[in-house]
Length: 215
Image (cartoon, rainbow, N blue to C red; front, side):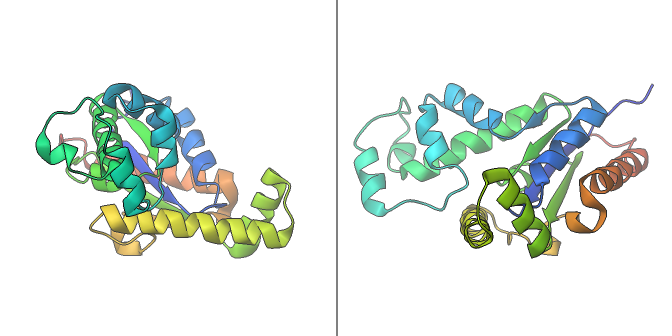
């Protein structure tokens, strides 16, 4: 019987269908796919309210003043080094811990949130980055959010800038750069289904090759 043992992380450009691709890959292997669910769990396990975790989700650090104001409250952590940390860092660490816990529980797909960096020590993990042609991404965002072409383009630029600053700030690698990942795929070339098929093949070959090793 085929036994799946791989953690898949997916970094993605906005509009590249990275999340949809992740969900379909997870569905094929019958494993969980974590995206927004990660935030709910991170909030529950860290004691932060979910709203706060959502506010910091894949966004670069907020202003110094905001961090200072938020830090006048205690969030149930007692270690002095932790208390002195800006709120955005605490939220990042809460997500970081949750990502590691999820990966320790078994195979899954984790979308975004520096998951590849969090799981860099997991030998049974594959780190993918999904990007796309501007035309295809713009069309997808226009349809999904019912926007004009100009507004869709602006949204893509803004979201990708946020994701890039977040990743580059917290990770020691560069967002979207080929050498930060195991495989980068342009989803516009094969389409969603074709990209899913390619990833499934890649994972199955990876598992065959690494069947003897454990993380």
